[in-house]
Amino acid sequence: MAVKLIAHTLIEKDGKYLLIKRSKIKRGLPNVYPSYWDIPGGSVEENELPREAALREAMEEVNQKIRIDKIIHEDSQFDTSKNTVFTRLVYEAKIIEQRDILLDPEEHTDFIWLSSLEDLEGELIVPYLLDIFADRST
Image 1 (cartoon, helix red, strand yellow):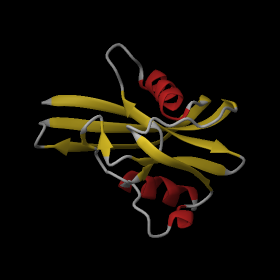
Image 2: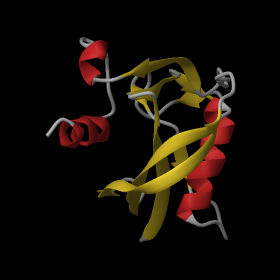
Image 3: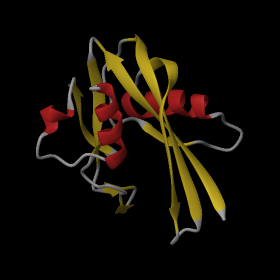
Image 4: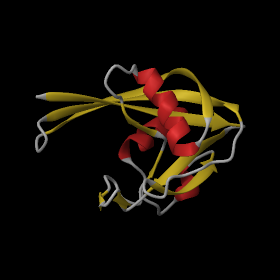
């Protein structure tokens, strides 16, 4: 059995959070959660710490230099088809250098700053974000 670690960041600025919309096709293959709203993140690479991966992914996916404050969410799932346990860590982060948001259209098609998921009513949202935002409203 393999274990794969994924690091994400919930980036906050002025009381709003940055979400990005996943593309339908990623590098020629169907994307995981196509057309769903998500937050910047991805796989932790070999010889990389999760915090470093979260910082790298924020720069690669949305062109933002961030400061990570703390872990706000963790979940794990076993994917039987891949015989792999996927563990996700989500960090809370703030922007330390404001820059234009730049998206790779191979990965993401849109972005939004929002204070509540209610702003995306009727849209597809990755399941773990529902838990994170539910925790923030309590």
